[in-house]
Length: 113
Length: 116
Image (tube, rainbow over all chains, first blue to last red):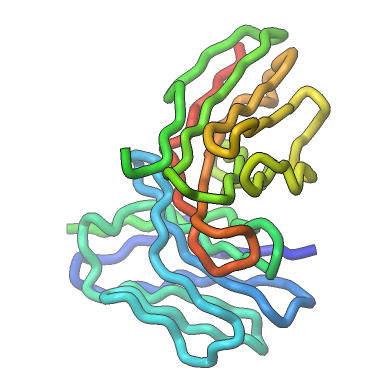
């Protein structure tokens, strides 16, 4: 079975600072995908960034980047230059080839002005 | 619209009543997923459709839950004889290709179901 663990239920960061959200997962699969989704108070889940497990290079999307450590089964999200609009729940998700998503329990991030 | 649309946005029902939740995926999207999100938790998988075929229903918690997508577009999640533990947000997501690709899932706003 696959499990996704987010050990930080709540985090806060000052505007313009950098914050890192942690995620670990457990799987016996070798090919899979990892995602970070953002869920603002309005509730719609929005894709932030994705990473293919076979790629060693860490994915980057503007202010968002990941630190993917396959051997350690770790997939952290770094948000640089935090903005007020980044306030949301962040979910780490795992998808193995040919199957559904497994989500973590989420990290509530608050950006403080 | 351009996104995944779910209706109703909110639903209140008395215990024992049947409810039906609707999902309009993005036009042309092959894959459709239903998730249940309890308060303070991440979404949990319920079922998956590839076009009109329900390929995976392993996440449905009981036989009171039923989902269909008869024409490969709109999907309905039906819950019969609702119970208080069914109270949750029900999320629908669609993706362009069949499951197994790295295509991201696009989520709707969800339906918040409250069972009294």
